[in-house]
View 1 (cartoon, one colour):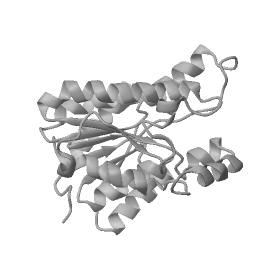
View 2 (cartoon, helix red, strand yellow):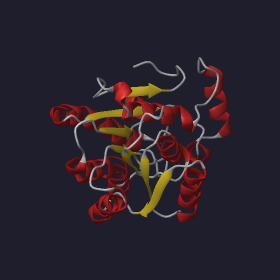
View 3 (cartoon, helix red, strand yellow):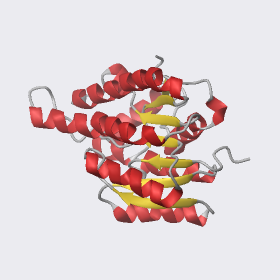
View 4 (spheres, one colour):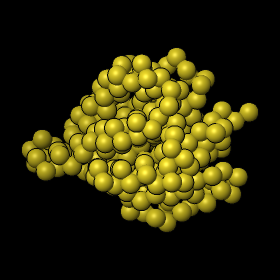
Length: 251
């Protein structure tokens, strides 16, 4: 049985890695998925094609989630495609941008990292909630870095993801009376382009050796949890920041 039959979902940054896995798995569970992208249309087209090849339904919508006009357009285009109600929001947009120490950072860099990770989550949540009926779910992508401060040069990213975790708790309290649940994931070392770009291979091998499950995570490890949190199977879970790290860190 498909757990999300008849639901409409938005996945921001839904074209690669964790976002792509979320888009595909939500669609596999019966949701109609609006896949958001910012720059890489080819990756978005591939994600939608994979959904459709498996019999799912998806549309690709361009937009920068740090800009309110683009966020509003994402909501409008989703409703044009699938109707007024939006049942699932996955706030996946975010990124480290660069590793910089306190001495290397300037205000512009800090603001950019905060906007990409926290402001995008705020803007999209604010825009989508009015279209969410009771029983809807929001899942934010935070990070282990929001718990432990992150690796070297990741302080801005860690602060931003910590803000996402606190925002998750606040929205769980505020939106709960409307029947809307809000949770987040805190992934550890997941085998994604993020770590291809920012984490040396030797560090990744060391993490693999030290994690109790002796491997990096796969994007599907996150996406399967997102699908669970989006479904009625998790109907009494809200305000949770769920660790997905193979035992690397216990909150």
